[in-house]
Image (cartoon, rainbow, N blue to C red; front, side, top):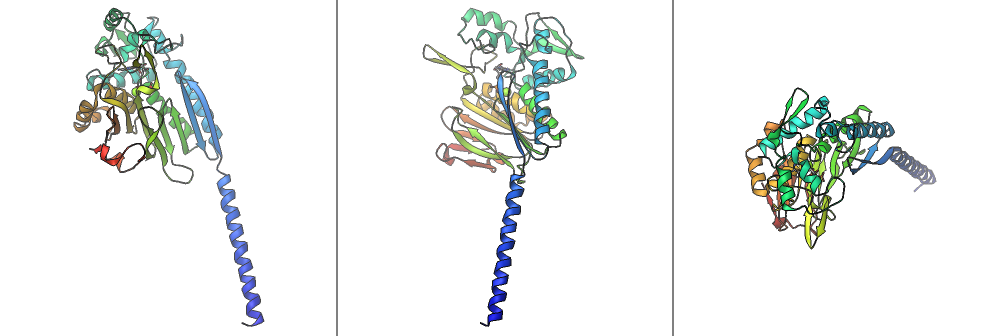
Length: 354
Ligand code: ADP
Ligand code: MG
């Protein structure tokens, strides 16, 4: 090789190295430029975690926080100024349009699930101490008495007024409001100019847009103990809402009691389901159905799905993963095709795809 050629080869490789170094500098600085903001709040008696990405991440978190506190003040059973407190204590019948919307949709879910979801369950939930955290096993007669005031047919909406059968009827939106709020917070995040965020409201996961790299968010589904991740699902602009016994429970005299009550008995629901996760774009529907499915048990839940009852709730698709107490699972096909199982936790042969 001539001396000239050797020199030009060296010059070429020098420039190649330079270009590669520049490229990697640009790529790393691009990456580190993705602003990430995280925040944790305690509202609705539960922990809310938010991660927002991009230029407007800070504004997104601020907008989310404002919405969370606004809804907490509106819907809490314990805040004396809330719509729900006033209705429960017969101080006012009138509620805001948003509270009325949640009540109306919750009543519709009750009707479609034959009362498995019932927002008038509050007197029973209170007896068990699941509101204040002073858990105890009530006597049979206490439960019987409280059940006299439970029934979704004991209230109705007249304009934005909640009309009750009896002043002792009280409501608790604990099973549906977080789903509704998740959607509203996601909207506030988008309106703040952020298109990449993920939030968890007491285990209800809502994704906004995609990850900063443009890929869908991966959401982990936990086993019935609420600990081990047994599957991951990639989701875009979607809610994943889980109802399980691990979220609030206590053990007394060796008996395990949890917070999802069967409105027909007044006792913690004893279905064949250990936990159920619903995937749909409407958070309220996801939340309400996750509680209802838990109470109904897997057979009725599958029937509900196959009869497309959810379409009456304005949702054109519904997916779910039911983990049964016997360790087997039922998963709908379209979410299954998006799901990675953790083989240390579930094997494919334990999953029935419908
Ligand atoms: P979490 O609040 O842990 O996300 P759920 O969405 O399943 O779980 O809601 C359970 C809460 O809803 C309970 O803490 C209680 O306040 C209330 N609740 C319990 N059982 C029912 C029921 N069958 N229908 C409506 N609300 C219920
Ligand atoms: Mg729920």
